Length: 339
Ligand code: 2P0
Image (cartoon, rainbow, N blue to C red):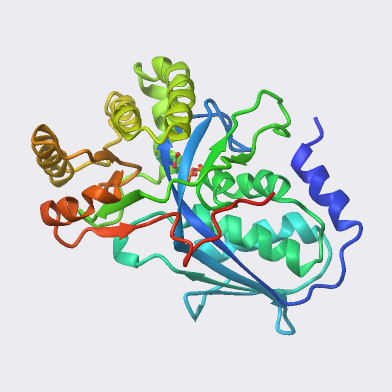
């Protein structure tokens, strides 16, 4: 079978110019309805749709430029050895564009997420790299096309081409042409995220390995894809109504079910620690006293809360030092998504 995304890049590259320096930025994102499980591991095609909120200025900034000294990859200001995992991934991704042609490139990437926040940077990293490569070669790719391309780097990168809420449509086509991000054209200025840092130790499983192992061995996984698809639709409806009282419990249930599928894997995939559960217990106690904040957790121990601005002071008191993000702050983002 021909690959829809490779065809897309090959066609676009027919009118490529010699590369010129180009810098692109992309926000990281947190899934409110999770992507967990692939129907095609080579193309990162998901078993279920997912929906995220982008993190404003937290993300990646990547510059691609022609290089006179062979391929060079830099991360956060430091040159990387050609054999390092990051350099190999970035250059393999660049090869999708330049193919067999000898076009040496400099890829200079900066993570704008505080390292201690322990958030994945692969989503924003591949979204920024896709846009920087497209810009450097002068390609006329739109964001939905770049979202499909970014997916080949990392599934969650599909959602990092836009600010605000983004739904990643699972699609049904075998070649993946209908599996890409779609921004929700709405702003929710009072929406807030708090990141509660629990632990920054290296995780026991990469998210990719943890996901595949869960699909392969967890007897609870069978119930996930249909429930996750239903959650994604219900979460989109609650967002459209700016209805936190409906949204929050759905988001928390979706995250806990994802972690339940991992716990049932053999052996278990465990990202949450005792400290994560202690945060959740403290949140539940505060909720019983009226705090409308809800938790979501990804492939790591940190807990992220969603709530509205009216509760920010209470969240700050409950979790001193939590990092606050206002994803629709117009000083930081142009949240009116453009395709
Ligand atoms: C998500 N996660 O929806 C889910 C929730 C982690 C937990 O997407 O294999 O790095 O590169 O497609 O995108 C993390 O997985 O996995 C992830 P690959 P990715 O955000």
